[in-house]
Image (tube, rainbow, N blue to C red; front, side, top):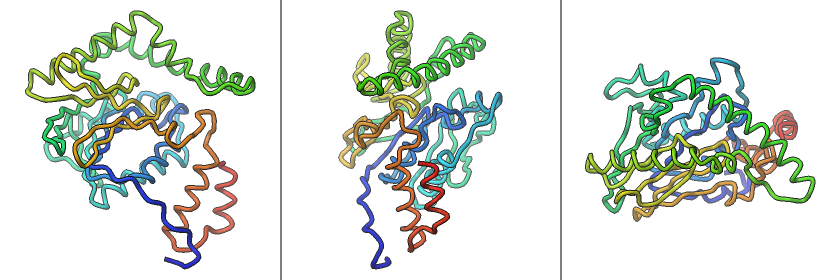
Length: 297
């Protein structure tokens, strides 16, 4: 390393990392936060638990920026570096399901309809996106698409709502998440979803189930089975991680890094990207690159 280069920051090592509901291709996706998480962590096993790419949205309109590119690049870099990467598609990236065949691998990433993982302390976990246990997705696709539109509208309202809160001196608060949890039927649906997944995993002899889909990070016992929802990278920016002793933990990346959900992208992350470039190429970023980073920040 060049003597003038800054020291490489320590990366947090995990045995396994589970992420879902990134929704690349949408304006609500916090790809810059996910890229920051991937830069700061390493793992032996990386599970992409569905809705990584939002095919529903990309059919209607195209949104893709450098942060989306960076998040994908870091996933592929991990696969090339020896991390076992498994991609279990969800309903928003269901277009990938029709191409899945036994042993299918693309750029070092294995595609599977579902997966199994055994933790360091011997727990068998079923890994599935979870949309198959959502009665609306299964039986009322038009209603699901309408719900997707309403959720996008709520996210837009949420952003302006928090801009006002910020001006008044208040911290970020997710109006869209609060609205979802205040609707009685939505709460009942979440409970049914969790119970259905837990019962299926239990019937198949698993000790727990890892899923996504409902954008609600959770880790608890449900009907005698460990229910693990890794959340999303739209509102909560959470990941499920497994430590080397088998201990499981939900990581709230916004809270851990003290990031602002209103910053797009945060200047702190732009600086991190510049340092990453310097480490990779062994020299300070070019003036043009520095200007580009500053402009993006």
